[in-house]
Image (cartoon, rainbow, N blue to C red; front, side):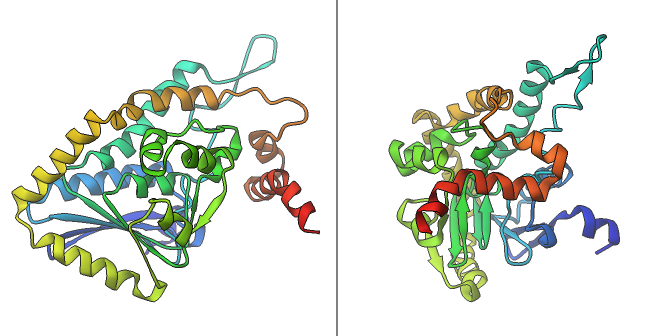
Length: 297
């Protein structure tokens, strides 16, 4: 790994034995993904889908985490820098800029969700935000017992404006899906299993072995059968209305990122600007969890 790769991270691809292994490789940042890495992820899926010998995509993270999602250092800046008007006042990015970016961003998850090659995600440690979207877009998920899974990014002000809301409602049921998003709690592996977010939980030391066992069973299936099975799954998702989330998700997200904060509300973007990512992230958790902590004292 070069010095620049160690700083920015990468998404690595290896085709072997009927598998296309995709690894999110930024363990020093818990595999938080930059826009560059997300583009690399799309390239890896393109390679896997174009390779006739690849029957299954295996998605994992380097080190002890799957992914904490989009790097918070980039969040909020993806719409472009704030401009200054003729009177010296800051102007927020336009709704058209928000919609254009969010449509592109959501398209990445739709790309994985509708891939003609099935995906098996091996989840461990933190699987949060965009990282959870990657797992939700996968066909199968095996989780290590170290897994911590959820959507804490909802505390940035999204409050349920999630890209995968339809899938979560069908999978978890409407009430449990609203709990996951509105409370923005992080679930352990067994809670994720009980609610259908993962297929199976194994000890951390057995995760790769369990993944290889399932992968070997899948790659023995005929190529045409695998692709037709996934095409049938995509049609079923369309008929159930689940893929409609890719039509409206970016609109709700664009609106949610333009929320107005009142004086008594926590503004992550403003705090990050003044204090940096680490401090603002800790203050966010403290703000939303203060009642829980006070009750424990």
